[in-house]
Length: 559
Image (cartoon, rainbow, N blue to C red):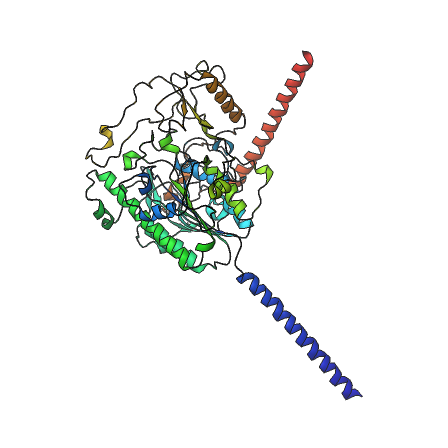
């Protein structure tokens, strides 16, 4: 009986063991299948280039050869009513937050490398949203959103990895940048540290493309990826391998010739990126966005003809950008999208495509425009606040009177509502600059620019951009009722603005105090002190607001 019992027990153990083994194998098999199962979420490849002018792409009539960009745009959707900001940091901040500059405090200029300033930490960034939706998030290239403390760095703002540079520009080979005499340092980073070991003196467009391709090669395409590739090209300094210059010998203007060669190198990089997306299994479930961050800089070879103005201005040449979407997932390919779009729109559009969540308390200024892009439906966007900058140089002839008592036209501001565009203050350099292809003169000589003389002394303009995209006919005197409506809209926006963040230079930022490298200089004690100051200022701000409310209440009771 004892032996029989033991044998029975052993048999039961074997049954249980076999059953558990089959269950465990089934469980781990299902886990493996879940990992290997193709994702329904699209891979998102966002390419942002630096200072590419509106005309500086083949399909806009340029003499610069861009066969890859032309093909990607022709087989995707060209965005022909697409707006960005006139400078680097503002465009990138709005891409990362989906919010206007007036709502993040970055409404003036760019973030300087010596300023204790960065994209405000209370804003949930696009990569943070995509990461919470299950995406691997990688950044390659230009950051330019501040780095004075470690919590401002890309890997603290939602990116799993970062390889690139923190400042606005630098040497394409040596990755060295001087902000001013005696304020010079190295600026190539892997994660949060200097990338000395990875620096082989390779031209940055090639280096960043190689890095992006390596990321794609290592990643499992069955898991969604967000790759943010922010090229240094084609920002100054004008540097390019000599072999790209050969094809532009016919351009006598040296700046334009070098710039054209840089664009061609960029086009080749896009070809290599596209081939990698196909080679490693991403292409069929991918959405690629291509965008310039602002208009071209004519002094550095760029061109926005026939648009007015240039980088750094609120004329169309500074803010209407080259942009397209390329994806097999588009419902209608090979089309031109004329729906009104702004760089803030990518945040809700991409998060929604990624099956992520948008929170009401984020107060986004962007709209989900995927149906407008993919299906050609009307845009949900009807206006764009290009900006209100309370710090910029005031227009000498601006006044409240010129703004009908609604708005001080000395303040730099720009607003688009439907077909109409309103500008106040000093919008910036306003010439129309034809391509410099056939001139050996530098732009300082104003070679065949169309100079604007009748604009002097003005501080307010109104244009019908749909009918007059080149801003040649100011209609502000003909339609004062439209001007007043738009000034009121500008006033409404201004009431929602937060204080401008533009702190003075902090000399502790000097790279000589950080091993010769540009990087965070705030200590833990500095961060703690800053946090306490913020808590105190927020408390005092709430007290002031409560006091104002009480005073209003007393006034009402007396009357």
